[in-house]
Image (cartoon, rainbow, N blue to C red):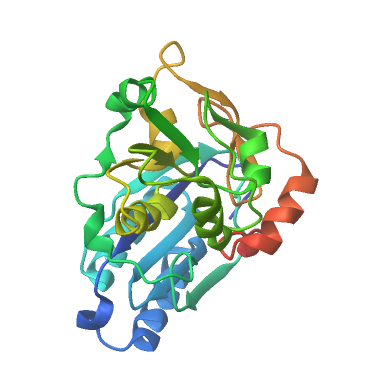
Length: 264
């Protein structure tokens, strides 16, 4: 890939029973072969609970990749899309892990039903005074940018978030909790976890910050700052163009997020 050409970056995930696809090692090999065939770069994580990926390529390559990977994974991808003049991923990596996002808690994903809020309805939800707005991301992500009025749990990694909730939040007091993350995957797991704990009304931003920025005008946006992304762009601004993130933050992300490691 030439670094002077236009690249499409897509991120996607899904919680689904992967057993119908066969042995995960076989699925991994098919996806690796597809990476090579299409000259796509990036990372996909496979687990019994689903898949999680971020990849980049020219638009025609991405279109071919989507068609083929949907056949391999027997699904229709729900994607967040952005563009850049430089390829933010340089390597190919297909991993098999225990979880596609690491929480280290047993979660009934089906409890997430009814918790999703579309980008166009998000402002109305988080503007209500009895709604507690929780940023589920890590501290360095929060400091790069967040929604107006959001709480920073001041965590180093996602699996620390349950301890924060146990110490600071109470289902009897906090009846309505809204949460968000970069692309939606962390909330997809944490919203049902909160329901398991007895929180009455739980909302999650469907598609995460990236989908919100994609669909919300600057005038209507309640987002402040830039959004941390786990690739060589480091951050994106409100228009999803490359932001002003620093290499220091990038080194932190490399240690914390497996999706980022392919950007080196």
